[in-house]
Length: 48
Image (cartoon, rainbow, N blue to C red; front, side, top):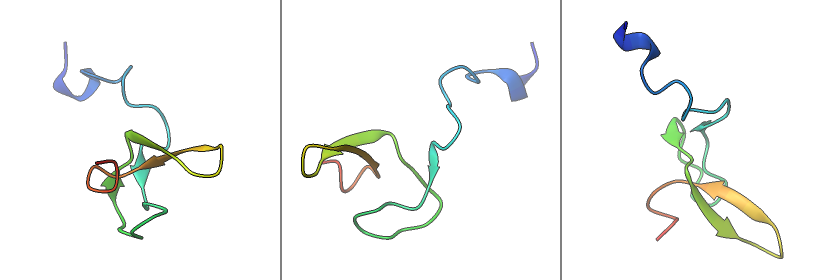
């Protein structure tokens, strides 16, 4: 199996981008934070 295809099923489209809380760009958005009854994906530092 090629290395480029490993882990493809866990990386959904839109998993990397800009964090809505700290405005960092190009970070992984895998952690969930609740804000006003809405779940948003945030970076690792904001998810703590």
